[in-house]
Image (cartoon, rainbow, N blue to C red; front, side, top):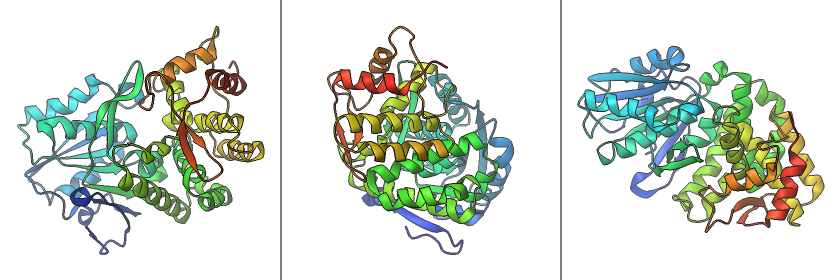
Length: 373
């Protein structure tokens, strides 16, 4: 698309043939009309946000879109992972149907990963597909969930098990919105940034270690580099394997354990990034027990995750058989095959592999990584 440099935005392109799209990264993008030029034309747009983000940024986005559409409506969803459900999804469909929205209506996802996932799923399903744009307002969404076209809602038995692959038309990463992010949410986003180092780029991991204080202090240049490099890595992986037939699964490093934590505690108790951070600790330790990586490298990763403000000790999900509970939850996972859990493991620093592991080893890892709190 090679849209801009009127805005002086950094640009990363997801190469998917005719479905290719750009990720724009810069301060001040959200409220600028130019950020939304060149998108599919239509009479109306629907902004989907939540009750936390809406009061902060909805008005600015409505003003920016006013010159592009005759009608710009908005719906505010309840905020939290626990609301990533069919019932909440129907609030989007209710508005689309009540307003007589057609196939040229464009949806805008203004929020974090929950809003982005649900808006994308609604766009994929409404009239069998309408265009949508991601305007992520959390660090985690900017570096991971808004990019790559995974859309979903949760089920009580498994996270993100009901959804579709459906690509956005554009992703707008406004670095300024990260200034209003709570510290806990910032740390959650750092988990997804850290993830890219062990699986794909050790130089980036070195950079994260050296610049972690700047990232936690929200220094714009540090955040800009972290968002851009994370998107570059994800773009390369998604471009090669859009529907997770093989390579793309490596992006789930830490997620198999992390999703079990989220589901086992009840969605919303831990943030997604917190589950991923602790899940990376468990996955790295499992990699070590399988002889794939050295203990000192694992401890280096654990220190970095802890320094990012993330939990490195897992919760106890079942006082009688905690490891058994983790195993049962992980068997309800998109990567599981015929009941066998597939883990993303570190096959030497900077390389990832997807493979099974004996239950006995997984039990050892869970037992060693969890304490009663």
